Length: 442
Image (cartoon, rainbow, N blue to C red; front, side, top):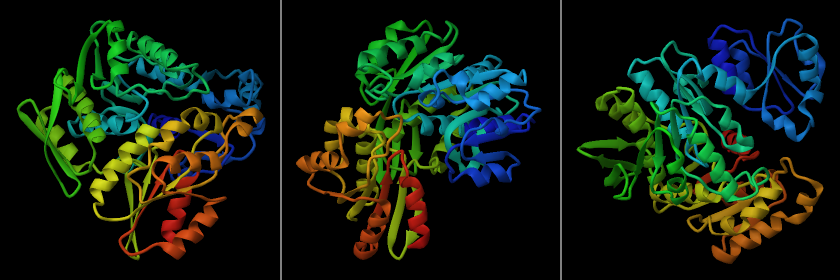
């Protein structure tokens, strides 16, 4: 929603938004002239001169039907259109060359790279990205060019409202299992997503992912696969890794990244293919990749304090956590990595607990905060505990410690951090707020 506010402001609209909880980026939005209301949703939050109200599908968990939401009711009384966010974005994409980036993870980095490359090429793209990008001064931008880059999330099947000319699929795994019945139902949704691309369009897909390969026969458009496996149309070969930096070869061209990780190379491959498809030269792509320092909360190095390095990452799926820790152990070779983790949602944690148990083998220690309840029923809250999660991690890596709050984690770290340590925050919960506060106070 922040990205959409950024984009609409760029189009010349006056923006008012409301959110039940406060958030770090609020000041950034307010400094740009956006009115942000924090607290209980109520009719008075909606200005009388509202031309349209756009809502996130997240409110469906609290208001059923959504038409009972007080702000939606007020907008309807005013005669203003009421539109779900994904539908509204689809309407914007219909007038552009829509580039929709989907997948269980990797969407934000891939979308950011694409946007920066298109900007560098002078194509003036519009973009809606799932995290703030400092070089873009926000998470969304409005440009006068033909292309529009959008993160297309599968939750609530919202990506089926998109109007893509180019669709990217980074990977497919079991996630959002509070909405989908199982992995097969998720794969069916992705089949429907790629079928939205017209015959003259392009589907760019990670061929290293077996679930992705399984859905590609449903594409109507040309398909280009990428990855490390020789079966891919575009195959990367790593030629050098040193001091966290990576070089890889793609056909006869060599590209460099200043951040570590094979998962980042996969994101870069998707961006390269799309950029080439719309006519961007390799020299432009190389410049952007070599300078790329990541998006907010994507291996974001906050800085150093008293000999300790602080890093924040959004990784909250077991595969993401494994990838980030693998990259961190390479980047910070020889240093102790103290991971602070908060699982997101009780029902989700229960379904993925065995995978979470295997995710932390590259950590020096794992400090586990209480699970964050999100859209959880009373039964969900009873079905699993943070203690269960810690026990499962300790069956494999024997490095997890249970904490009853972020305050006690802070106390523990202040007493135990040593020169050279790395504090890595992972998760989609309150851990990002915590590490930003802790880093500035340490």
